[in-house]
Image 1 (cartoon, rainbow, N blue to C red):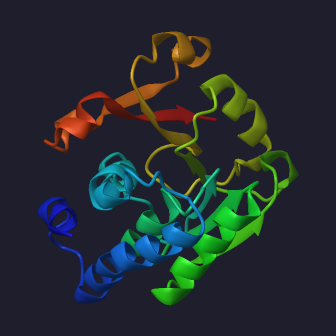
Image 2: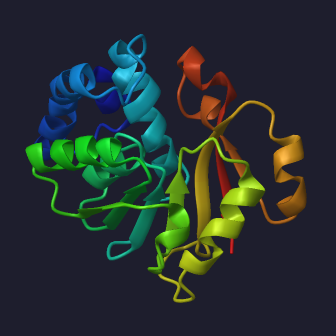
Length: 206
């Protein structure tokens, strides 16, 4: 928890309580349904919660925005972002039903009012959003093809609507097809922990 307040000192007491509750909830659910690697669950705040909040180092979503989290798994980056941005609506989608169940139960347990969930394949979700966020491992070009239909033409934010995803490692080849439009934000400039040395936020306007 100290990691969250270290980088986001202005969060409210209510938000602190929601972030603090995540550890026990994910520990409990993970023992029943494996949504986070067993070896990695102790790093929940650094590797999952703070990593998700890296998107907030790139954009401060305008209240009233609609954001889809594609391939949310157990709720990342959607749930941490929904805690941080209570006036933004988040729609969390995953093709694996048991993962959606965990994310739904966690959100209900901490009283999140600004999230909805859907168990479906990305291709099946037809609704429009200002942004699609993802921590998916899918190549960028494949992701862009799938979510093109989901990006709204109405603009509410300081930057154009599009895709914002969390990626790691070497991205030169992956971003080549959209290189002229892509912005890569290095999280090592925001967070000092070694885990973030190769972590990036990749933004493609659409």
